[in-house]
Length: 120
Picture 1: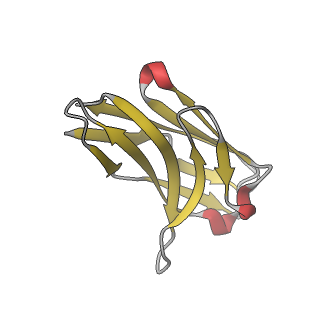
Picture 2: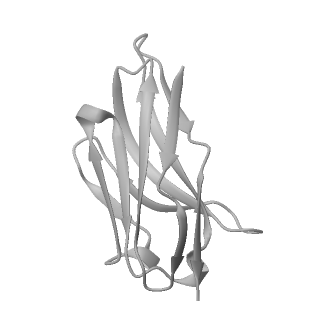
């Protein structure tokens, strides 16, 4: 089994910054794509940013230029640096990882989420 544990959420004023972390552990052979999603109350979960095992990145248009996704493969950890946060970005932020385990089985895993609240 694989576990993803997020941290770094909290309350910040509009225009402020937060850095989220997500550490993967368990029966990991290799982690392929890692990503951050968010889900606001009453809305569908949406992709915020994605990073491949080689470091290629992809962002939602709404966060380009303000958010940066990165990863530390040695620590099986993905980060999301969020700058210039807006009140409408208040949401639960969820880590997702595509993991191949030691039995060569690949599956997608989710963390439990971390709450980000942006005050106006």
